[in-house]
Image 1 (cartoon, rainbow, N blue to C red):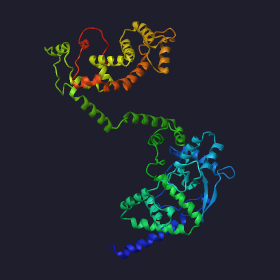
Image 2: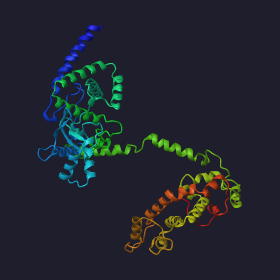
Image 3: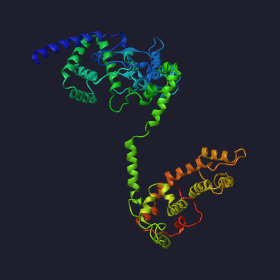
Amino acid sequence: MVTKKTVDIEKERLTKKMCSNSGTSGASSGGGTGPLVSFSAGTTHHAPHSQDAPNILVYKKMEAIIEKMQAEGSGVSVRTVKAFMSKVPSVFTGADLIAWITQNLTVEDVTEALHLAHLLASHGYLFPIDDHQLTVKNDGTFYRFQTPYFWPSNFWEPENTDYAIYLCKRTMQNKTRLELADYEAENLAKLQKMFSRKWEFIFMQAEAQSKVDKKRDKLERKVLDSQERAFWDVHRPMPGCVNTTEVDIKKAYRRGASSLGSGSANTAANSNPAETMAKTINLLKQKLERRTIKVSKAAESYVSYYEQYSEFDYFLTAPEYPNPWQSDSTELWDTEKQGKDIAMKRVKRWGFSLRELLNDPIGREQFTKFLDKEFSGENLKFWEAIQQMKALPQSQIKDAANAIWDEYLAPDAACPVNIDSKSLELAREAIKEGGGSSPSRWCFDVAADHVFYLMKSDSYSRYLRSDMYKEFLNGTKKKTSVRGLRIFSGRKDTPVIN
């Protein structure tokens, strides 16, 4: 049976143990470059095999720059600034940092220098002393270098208990500069609710660490407090800031499952070719089985597609007129001949996509009239000519390609099409510089895709907003042509798009 006396004895034993841990691990270093007071004993630790981590090469490059910045004589000027009734130790200004980058690195633009400084700050190598947002300004704002003990290359993995001890310790230090920000106060409340059963022990350890900190020199304590705060600004950033400690899952996968990545992890694998090949084969098998899209997203796309086309599926919805090829009824053809109102379902389908509009003969005819009104009908004619050329026999491809070039793409073309220079150059090489060989039936595909994209993104959207389409959609306009019957006749016409 657990009595109150037993609990009191256990609390006293834990308090002595935490005090001893804090006292031994909280050794300071001069100039603000040593390790901070450690976190709760046994929780914060280094990630295993940190030298094989996917971001280690980036960290090493950044640390090489930081070491140059901290070099005596040639580095950034770090000094102690005297303020009103106080001193600010081991700081430098943002202007000094930007000036050093432009003078000592191959950076000529101030914007690039600021970008590099932002990257160094976001990864925690330097930080502002009065702000939780790890950015750099090209002014007199004071900044400080982070101690190497907490550089990202050490791959600390702090837990929520460590963060709770840190925030709890901040509340015990009655200093204006150490007051909790709004988001930190919210995090503290959440952690207190999460660790409600052992919050007393967390509070005791924070109190023990706070007592050790008070024994330090005042200037040294300022430096250590700011470095500890900057560490948590990196690992628990304020809302709106990017967490740079998160590992890219793709890089981690390549490091752990493939020998194709970079770094020291591949050195040992390459020593055994058979093992390397076996890992490569397993990786390729996993890639074959891996989905490129989430099942939920795919299902959502399928559901939306079938909901959109459900009323046009004759297995689900009965057609308005029976199919004349499957029944003896000619009602559909009679309706087309008489020029009655176009079915609302048919007009509604034109608004699904440009291909749906062009697949319908009447829709294509109306879209052609709309393009002619906007003086851009040559785009559709050019695209249709290319589609027709693809359906020709190989013996007729050369003449058709030359005819398309002369009519639409040549410098003196009768009906010039506005396409980008890259597409025009590819078409010219296929026609004029083919070395005497016959052009392919796909030689204008790049130009056709460009023109189709222009119609889709510009002309088609305007057509859907035009009065011409709205009149059809409202049923106030009737069909005035019988060209729609060509789809049922034996005449040769532009092929229907699949």
